[in-house]
Structures are given as C-alpha cells and as structure tokens.
Length: 219
Image 1 (cartoon, helix red, strand yellow):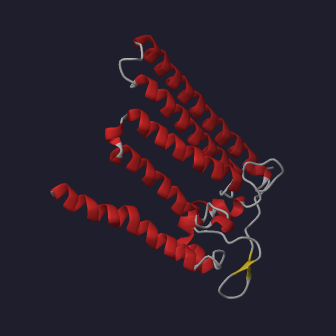
Image 2: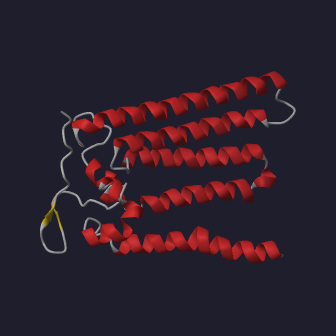
Image 3: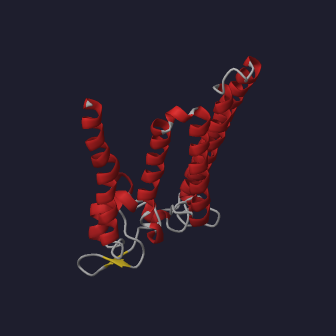
C-alpha cells in the first residue's frame, strides 16, 4: 500500500507532470524558438533539434517511459514478451527518426540510429540467453560473446564518428560532407560559455542581427 501511495504520485509528477510542463512551454514558444530570449530560457530543451520538430524531446521521453512500463507492468508475461515489446517500440521510433532526422547535427542522427539498432539487436539476442531450459548452454555462451563483440563494435563506431567530427571542426560548420551539418553553429552553441547561439538572420532584443562567429581556419 505504501509503495502505491508513494509511487503513483511520483509517477504522475516526474514521468507525466514535468514532461507535460516542458511540452507546454515548447508549444507556447514554438514560433519564437530562434529568439535570443527563448534560446536563453529554454534552449537546453530543444537546442539540439531542428525547429520543425521542437516536440521531439517529449517523444524521446515517452519512448523511455514506455520501456519502463514494458519492463514493470508486463513482467508477469515473461521476458520474451517484454523484449519483443521494447524491440517493437524501438523499431517504430527508429522509423520515425530515420524519416525526420530531428537533430541539427548529422553526427547526432547517426549516433541515435546506431544506439536504437544496437539496443534492439542486443535485446533480441539477450532473450535467447534467458529463454529458459529449451536454450542450450553452448548457445547461451556463444550469444553472450556475440553481444560482447557487438558492444565493442558499437563503442568503436561511436569513437570513430566522434574523432571524425573533431577532425572536421577546422573545416568550419556546414562544410560539405561534415558531420556537423549546416546548422551545427546553433546546436554547438557558444562553446565553453554555454550560451546558445541564435541562427543566422535572428535578431537580438536591441534589433541588431545575431550571426554566429565563423570558425577560424587553423594556420
């Protein structure tokens, strides 16, 4: 009883209430996303995403919430049903992600796609490990090593992409073939200062044009 008394209000507050407030704030300011004042207040919520998909952070939260629900609410149905439900959730979200490419940086779109694919494959393989007595011990060991190898490949791919993006920084944001993309100046912000940078064409409170500083070429 006490778990329900504590858990239900916490669920409503943190899992539903806070994202609902964030969604309301983004919806109310969806036509002013590039204004410096809006960027300063709420840029941490949507700064990495394209303006057309300002709502995407809320969708990401709902995806994670569904995973938690699948793990807890349908536990009596067995590991297989849990895993397949999560894989279905990841598959549908991956299709939407691939069509929308919501991040300003192509690098982040790639990393997000890789992470969802990896999670889906790893969950499917893990089901074989805990699938019951019908699964032989040798198959479980081989599957475990396969998951370890896949994880190593995934981590290696992430490191390679990050190194490639770092090496492309001197070329300037938006260079042809760059993983930083044409809107990288907005997504990357103002560097160590942590202040959001308005996209080209935006105006400040004083009416002056706000144009991100170009990346200096290395000598």
